[in-house]
Length: 402
Picture (spheres, rainbow, N blue to C red):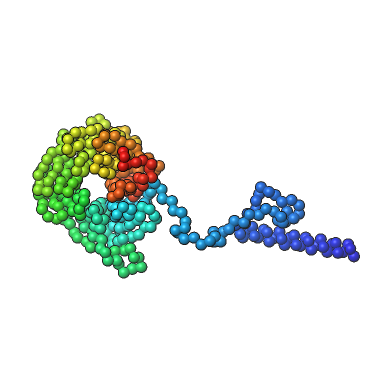
């Protein structure tokens, strides 16, 4: 009798062991959030069955307390890539909001530099924008397209009225057509005015400011800049094979030569300084003090198109770490050479410079824009026309005391 009871008890225990083993197997395969601590192995038959073993239960994501996007930490890198797709023009609205034009569609987007909150401002499709020039307010932008060899320009105004859709950020726009074949276009530094160039004849160009008051200047092929409210700047198109000239131009058309007989001349200026490059066997970079007419060589060398004035006497530029080569700036303009830039701060009064940031991914900086508070640098990477923004305050370099 005892023997039968013992046999029966063993059978029951074996069945229980099998059942428990099956249950443990199913739990471990169906719920991956339960994991055995492999560093402490249980002993004996009860350990084999899982009794007394050291289990750690890791809750599944779904079992965690509800989290909102605000609760989750958001990492914004010091240098942030905003877009993968090519853009045609960028600007700041206020101190921490950027706006840009998608090159392929002409759609306008907006995003904060402090958050991932992309929104579309305009979904009006105007394809193949090769250049978009923003006015100071950030509420108007001039699109330029090439259609059958003719340069077409449109002034796009972003209106305050929302489009009646589920997307609150979408705005209505108005479109004003500008004259054909505008060769140069610049906006005023502190007002919503804009000026442009047109070829008038074989020997003259026409300068128009906000659609009125046109005047003639001698020569063709000028590059236009607007350094101060009442002064424009004209520079001959740059080539290492020819001598270049730069002139200040009044609103009435009066010319005043600032630079001349310089090979490879290209410029960027404000009311106090002219940054310019030259080429005499190698690329040179210089500053001209408008008040004293003093020229100061600057290092490292770069092209003025890579620069933006951070303040009246300081400039922030992309400076190539792989300059080398020759025939600048032609080979860079033609896309035969691509630069890998450091971001360099130049003190124009002292003639000093300092690298404030070295990007981990190679960038060839063009169209740099600085926020009004000097905290953010936005630029386009010439390699793929993607948009980037740098938080200057996180570089560890002080730009205010430089």
